[in-house]
Structures are given as C-alpha cells and as structure tokens.
Amino acid sequence: MFVPDFSQVNNDVVLLALGQAFFSLSVGGGGVMNYGSYLHKAASIPRNAFAIVGANVSVDMLAGLAIFPIVFAFALEPASGPGLIFFTLPVALGQMPGGQIIGTFFLLLVLFAALSTSISMMESLVFRLVERPSATRKRMTIVAGGVAWFIGLGSVFLTTSGQTSLH
Image (cartoon, rainbow, N blue to C red; front, side):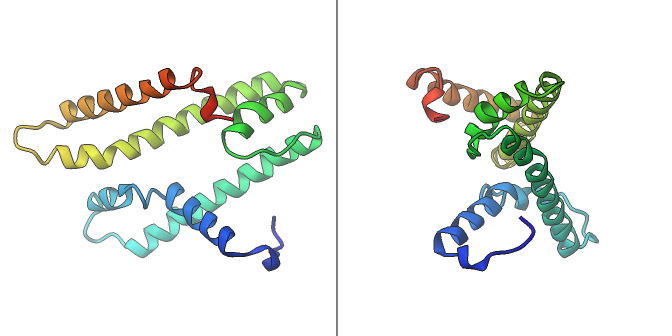
C-alpha cells in the first residue's frame, strides 16, 4: 500500500483511479463548482483544493489500514464496493470480540457518509432550481428530494429488494 508498484499501472488502472477521483471529490457532479461559488472572494482556491484532496486521500488510506487487516485476519475474500461493506465486513466483525458494537458504529458512519453525499449531490440540482423566480430553497430542496426518492423507489421494485445491484 505504501510502496508503489508501477508495473501494475496500465490504462485500466489509470481510468479507474480517475473515476474514483472524480467520484470522491464530486467533480463530475458539479458539486465542487457549486460549493466554490459560496467561497469568499479572498479564499485561496489552490489551498482549498489541496486541503480537500489531502483530507480525501488521508481518509481513504486510514480506511484501508483499518478495514483490510480485519478482512485478511479472518481469511475472507477482500471484495470491493458494497460487497465489502455489507457482506464481507459484517462477517469479519461478527467474529471479533466487541465486533457487533464496532460494526454498528461503522454502519452508522456509512449512513452519515451516504446522507452527506446525497446532500452534496442534491446541491447541484437545488442550486439551479433556486435561481427560478419565486422559488425558495426549502421548497426546491423538498421537491428535488421527493423526485429523487420517487425515482430511487423504482430500484427497489425493479430488482429483488434491491439485492441484485449489490451482487
């Protein structure tokens, strides 16, 4: 993890890394531009950008240092994405002393991360809707959230309780 192996770098790895960067920094969704519009004129954009990227990389590294040793200690398959969070990690934590408490705390943190991410993603839409005449931020947030919830509800009814999207 801390010793780079450049022989493993190819076009697919670069594309995956760029996709992760765009997703985790909210560049692709336009969130960064919206939040940037709230910055004070005197704020240093490069300093803020480096702080955000540094915090993001630090959290990613800490997560890797915390999660993967647990998975490997119990000889489980290190899946990625939702499979790691919802299938592999609960099995590993269930075998640890105090694992239920740690697992509950971890899943609560995942919930807060999901909620804060959804708020950030919704900001792009709400930011545009509020520009309309007679549109209040509260009303447009409720409308956008309701539409997103209604569309998301379709994923539950179009799959087997949403499970096929996790496998």
